[in-house]
Image 1: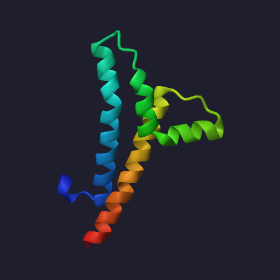
Image 2: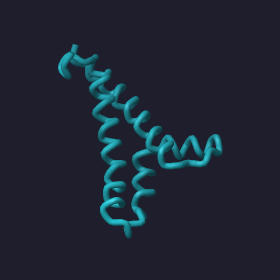
Image 3: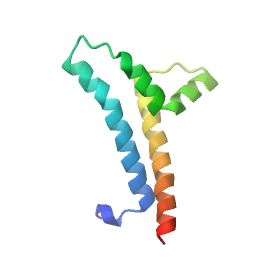
Image 4: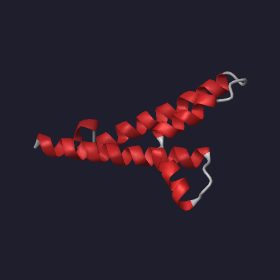
Length: 93
């Protein structure tokens, strides 16, 4: 089953989840290529790419860590992409 045969909601979810994953990888690549890089901009990047984690941490008073934030961000953007893909699929028909 090729990419063209997939439902539009799945394509949209995968595309946005991959974009979020790539955005999260950029500071990690910088850190591993330069050990003196402290990642000051990494926190700001997570604020913009992952608002769900910040809301959940404030609501439930859960301490945030990077793997949890990355996981929640990917899930959030998969859901948003799925919604957008579903709407596009509805308008195409």
